[in-house]
Length: 366
Image (cartoon, rainbow, N blue to C red; front, side, top):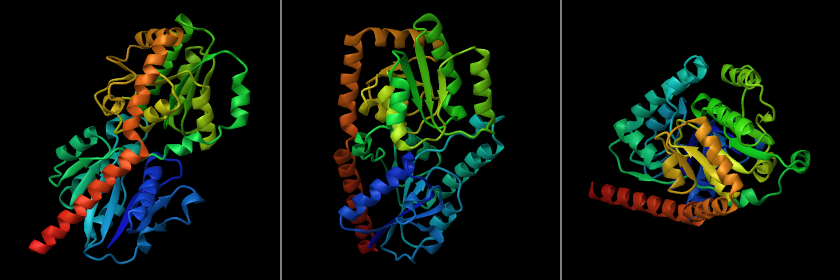
């Protein structure tokens, strides 16, 4: 029996790419023959570790193929045609409406991905969802197979690597308070609400402040251009868009920051929240009825609404009151324990062994 992973897109440093690699190592550690297959590879770092899906060896009936569902891809139909046992790991699909007026390409991609997700509803033997929020998505799409919740597997030792020295040196000498967001510059992340909050904070709480927006974008992207114009119209200073950067630089921005702000309206899990917990950055996040509240699990500060002045005042209070900040960080440290590698890997081991045993029992009964 072999356990293969199939992912439409693989990128080194991406949350899903990291999850695939971590699961591959775990599958091998559990004694199974493993392999990673993809449609698109975004950099050459992973080239020696995985193979294009069209070169996947012929699977046998007792093999398991795990499909990472997050975006539109012909691999969904390839996956459905395989005569083996099938597991879907669902990382969520952004509702296409968020991209209306911004990107026809992303709008269609998300719409197609939802069609493919519904198509696979009766093709999967078992599903793992990053969160309870994602599990409910699958149930709404008609998935009737067993579904368990498995958080993204994160090898946190990667975050102990040295930060980029140039970034640290460039920003370390001033005494500005640094607000941070990490993630793709996309409409569902509501970056404009982060900018509004920073504007209120800089004008009414602390002029000596800075906003780091750490995430990828394209210069031609309508949403990004509108954000840049918005910053200019507000006459804001010290708003830094980094674009896609190496992991060592991402670590540097976490190290430099004083607070993490999330105003997103749609998240299937939100790995940056765990990163902020790891780096002991107090989290302020908007409860937009997605997975943010679930991932925080009672830690951080959860906003009832997205009022930028309220958010700014709360951030000001946190950064002025060390006792309060320390209490928030202590709660985040406790929550982070739930996502430790050994805990999540133990969950996966239990789930995969349960699935293998269950399917063997079913086959024997037949």
